[in-house]
Amino acid sequence: MPGEKIKITNLYKKWGDVTAIDNMNLTIEEGDFITLLGPSGCGKTTTLRSIAGLEDPSGGQIYLNEKLVFSKKEEIVVTPAKRNLGLVFQSYALWPHMTVFENIAFGLKIKKLPKQEVRNKVLSVLEDMKLKGYEGRYPQELSGGQQQRIAIARMIVNRPDIYLMDEPLSNLDAKLRVDMRSELKELHQRSGATTVYVTHDQVEAMTMSTKICIMKDGVIQQVGSPEEVYHRPANLFVAEFISNPRMNFFDGPVLSESGRKFVNAGGIKLRIDPEVIRDKKAVKVAIRPEDFILTDSGIEYEVTSYLPAGSSNLVYAQNGNDKIAIMFDGSYRVNAGEKIKINVKEELFNLYDIETGNRLF
Amino acid sequence: MMLSGAWNSIKLALVSAFFTSILGILIGYSIVRDRGKLLSKMNDALSFAPYIFPGIAFGAIYLTMFAKAHGPIPALYGTFTILVLVSVAKHVPYSSRTGTAAMMEVNKELEEAAELQGAGFLKRFSKIIFPLTKSGLIAGFMLSFITVMRELSLIVLLVTPKTKVLTTLIYDYAERGFHQFGDAITMLVVIITLTVTIIIRRFQKTDLSKGIGG
Image (cartoon, rainbow over all chains, first blue to last red; front, side, top):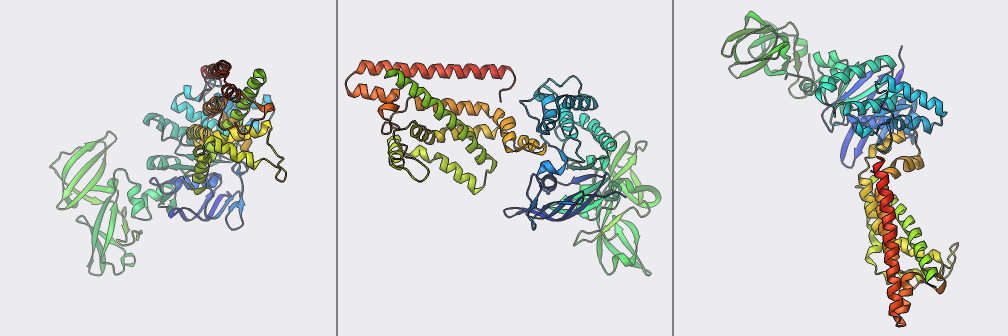
């Protein structure tokens, strides 16, 4: 049974009138790779910095390894150095006046380890990070990807049991970013260190994490596995944020037919549980582009554009005022102007309350 | 008399420039790190206050303030210390500007990274901030050194025969009509200032070629 590695209770942070974190409660288990995901200004970086001890929250508690490290009420603030964690900054924050070796050895020297041991540790971590031979260089002489690796090496050489990463891949070019994703994932699997990762990139979050915590305006919207947040978004914000290509939304009127309840989503009649709908007149229906099927009994739509992308194809289609995006696999061919008949895969839709935006089903 | 005056001038300029530039970096640090906060704005305004006083008035203030002992502070009139004090206070506005500018260049995360690695404030200052703001420090040092070297109005009320500097010597000679003597010492001031500037420049350049700079 993994223990509670990081526990945040009733945390909030205010900057003047602006609330960066609003009464946050979050438990992160040992070995988790959790991603704090959200648009800029949602409080994810502030949360990360509060865990690190670089930011003083305005209230609440933070526990690491079930030990209280921050409490506003009890006036407990454990310094960052004593929290046994490492942080990779978005800017990498490598010291430009030190060589790669000196950058990585800095923390070990502070701990006053014997010279030979420092040397062995630094060289071994450099080898792990495929940076052997670069120890005498200065950071600014190296490429972005190499600087990124030095920043990681500098963190792991101290053997922290929590890794914190603040948008570490956002300064890399697209190809390198994809490579680094799998490298970071491997690093997590190898070390088993609990990792808190901040990003605004949903693909990064989906591919790397064991858990995703989606935030907006300082409030947690949903915490769950990538599958959960993808297939069962807790509210309209999450549904919209975790969608590429865009999710289809319909304002569906509720129909009653011989005791059964249906909702009309762009002409498609979806049968729904009366318990869920109660006496609502309309609900919002969200359907992912890949959750449509072609069927002769389906509703007719006219294809407005066809965008092949190799492994999958995106089709935009229209029926009266309803416009939808559908994703088919790469072998599917269709031309603009053609008529297609579609339906929704069994139960693969989500219903939301139009007023609150929360998921009904 | 001229030799002791020259020695006093150099000593005063070096010691004052040393303290002024370090104080400038520290003030710059506090201003930049707390930017936006009231304390930072007050610090900024306060560090600039000496700039608005005429030098002679500043000297007069120090003369009366330190004429007799106050608690643990002895009467400083006639000492070298009071000249250093007044020079440092008067030139902090310049060095705090260069210090602030240098500190702006240092990303806060560079210091935080060191903090996470267990470096205390002194370690962070000596290993990270100080090396990265060295050019600002040197600029503050040079600015203070040169201005103190040719300062007269600020210290004229505070010097005694024992603590005479080159500029007050020039003033004495000029007053007594020995203009040639005065001119000779003026040349000396210029030569010393130039020499020190060149030495520091040289030292700064070799640093840059080693890739340290900043």
